[in-house]
Structures are given as C-alpha cells and as structure tokens.
Image (tube, rainbow, N blue to C red; front, side):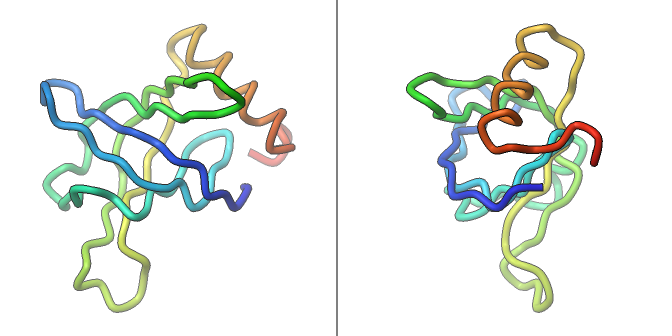
Length: 111
C-alpha cells in the first residue's frame, strides 16, 4: 500500500453525467481509499461499480472498480471517504494498475 495525494475523477456505471472528484489517500494493487469526495458518496452507493480515472504521469489511467466501503461524515472513527476494489477483467485496466504500481513502487508479492 502506498500513501498518495493523487487526484481522481470517478463515475458510477449507469449514472450519466454525475462525476465525483477528490484525492486518493492510499492505493494498493487491489484497491484504493478515496477522500475529499465532491460530491460525497453515501452508503447506498456500496456495491456499485464505476470507472476511476487517475491523472498520472501526463496521462489518464482508467481503473474499473467496485465501491466496497463508505465512511460518512458522521463516522467518529474513520476518515470520510470510500474504499474501492479494482476489477482486473480488462487488459487496459491491468496495464494501468501495473504502470501505477511500478511508479509507486508497490510490490506485487505483498498483495
């Protein structure tokens, strides 16, 4: 896992026109924690899938993912944000994760 401050945009499949933006707090080969979300995601979004776009190294890396955790503003124990798990069903997605992992020095053996 790597701590980051990489910006992102996220769109949920089936929600045309709605885009979420923020910062990736930490990322691994299998997922990420999204913070400073605008607008906020709610617990009702858990299990929805979408496309996370990360601006990285002068290009946009697309990562298909599923929302698996939401921490709302009233949570007293965890930071506000969303946990996502990457889907690896597509060669383009796998290439994006591999490129990001190499740049952030993430270890394939640790995940």
